[in-house]
Image 1 (cartoon, rainbow, N blue to C red):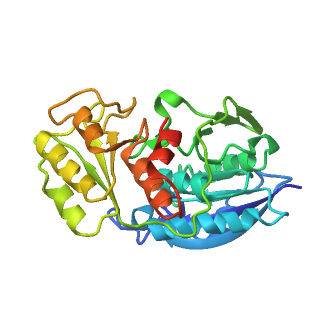
Image 2 (image 1 turned 180 degrees about the vertical axis):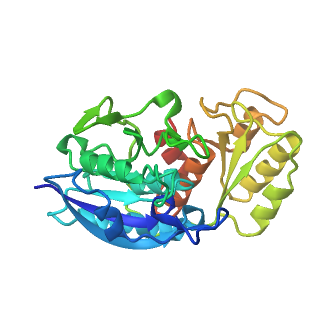
Length: 326
């Protein structure tokens, strides 16, 4: 009988309204045993163990907590009786926690993140179905080697590629031009593709002083200069299009990189890769100054990768982005 470890962290899937009032606060309060009990008879033949790791909404999760979660997942998977891990997590930062786990979990066994867009006390909550599908995926031997995944509405996605695309819809997670890895259709798991851009880091710590700055028309250099002077170890710039910034920002980035702080360039576009094409503050100027281009990684994913790489000894950050940026 497959044995799957359910690791709970809170989020909407574990949240209920604090009172019967229409505008009552919704907070994470449902324990893992209740989530397991909610599966009823959906999963005959699969044993589910529960680990209540924490109980917060995911907008409260920070890099140290997400790193500790990844290490806890790795500990569970090191147990030979554990065949896979399912993590229940809030949707706001799920893609970041999943990508972090993909980068630092050493086991080849499946890791599936899931959650809900509708709270546990909603009459049409999507949580129990998502957990059941995730457990089936984690218990599937063919899912070994797929890395950390996110599963919602029957579709599962690679942690590197997936992002939350809608504030409230239950099918919020999408992988854009990459496409999903597969789907769970009733009791059958269908795998359509396997991820190629994967690497595991033997990270003992994570660098927390990595910041993300998004460009907008006429953005000034003030934020970059403040962060560089306030101890940032790296700055991710989510630029326009192919990876462009206003000229004052490019000039500031050049000075910051000359001082030894890496600047990593991504795009605020939902699809496509960054590439140095334009001058006069564009990607060419950033490239000449030494910026690292992050391929098609989102700004949030690039920040996670930088935080992991900087937390490792003797890891070339530029080489890491060349390998995993796609």
